Image (cartoon, helix red, strand yellow):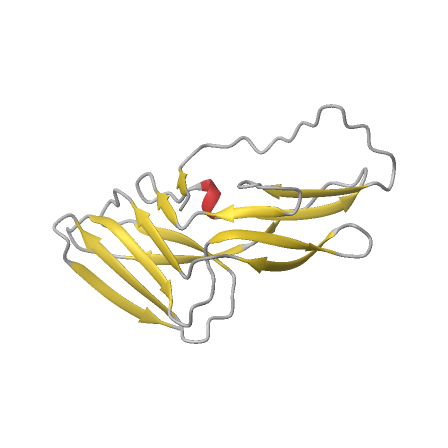
Length: 169
């Protein structure tokens, strides 16, 4: 499985050997690109503090040149506001109904050559996250937007392996 590391990104895009003409279709996936229509949401991720990895929350966009490309989120973000003194070192998040929330995905392409927003693929219903969570702050976990049939289970582990289980729909 692939592991996403927290990597800072400057969201400027530069294209070499690219001279579009007015009306040419521009398709963008950022980050985690695996092909012209593919991207990866890593099933194993490593966070820095309570900051999620850029690779965990890809975006897509399409526009006709010279218009700006507006990016659309592929993921929703779960926010956990926790109190206490224990530091969370690992989180597992499971789509109970088996829906894919990680792995290699493909964006659909419409008749005009632009992305249509339909996403297929994936290979895992579980996200595993290693982190050094600071107690008293909010933990944000991006999750591929998907209709879950049976909800999610989150398990939050401390360094000794003790965990808390949360079930939600």
